[in-house]
Length: 70
Image (cartoon, rainbow, N blue to C red; front, side):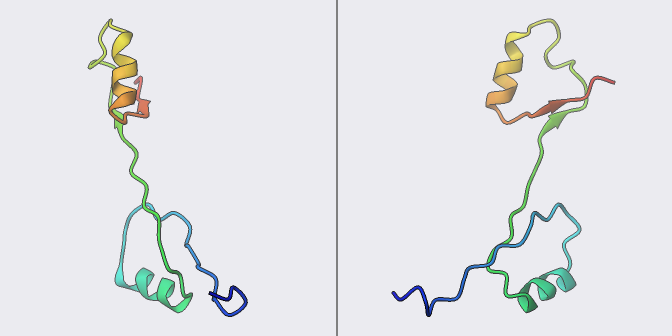
């Protein structure tokens, strides 16, 4: 395949929520080929850990990336 004749692949910035048809139409007009979606997993408070700090590593392995302290 000749790279001089191949159009570049465009990837849009991260989209966090509130998807709508108008957003998808704008991406189509801009010829974006992909969109990344991000999901953050966290805990509302540290009660699942209680006093066992070893559970922090298990939570991280399960995908938890933040724990709200208040």
